[in-house]
Image (tube, rainbow, N blue to C red; front, side):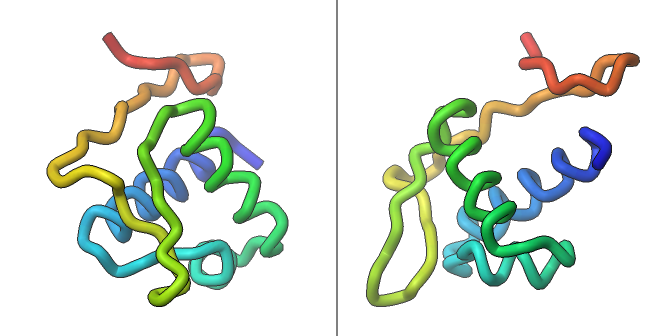
Length: 87
């Protein structure tokens, strides 16, 4: 799967969390026709590698950001289709 598709998933998840729509692995999987396990890995990558301060809300069964007005650390696509952090 191309990096641009993965990037689209990150942006979608970020927007959903920012709008407090409480996205979760199941919603991500349905939205992008993925396995739930792949969706879980995407969320873990965002939290652990991209440093998105995601918090799971058990009552809402989904994620939101720990802080108000958090900025997603945007990434850009290189010509080799690798995800690299923007400066």
